[in-house]
Amino acid sequence: MKKRLNQQITTNRDLRALCLNSKRAIPRLYKHINILLWHRSAFVFYQQSYLRGRDYLRHTRNLVIEHQEITYPHNSSAREDPYKSNEAAVKLGEDLNLVTLMAVLQLFPPDVLRDFRYSDLED
Image (cartoon, rainbow, N blue to C red):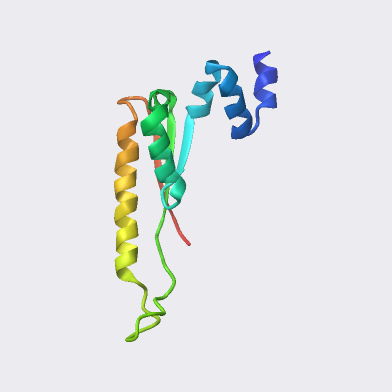
């Protein structure tokens, strides 16, 4: 039965549906977490985990944080140099990513992660 069930659940959507009916599936759902730090979903993950799912994070064994350097289009409203990037906005975005990363890491109970990876993606 377990083997058949594992073959039929191939997506997170399938697994979430199963979790609504069975708490035994929760460890599998939370075993590996991949967070796109540069995406809005990182903050949503923090909010949802902090409010409702913090206890489930004890099942996490693998955590991957993917970071991508923030770049914005050139600042076309600047009169002096319309091709200069908005450095203040880039700095603010990087600072927000760092704060989000620290908040997410603090959600996990001590000594649960077996593998932690921080991946710096190139454009």
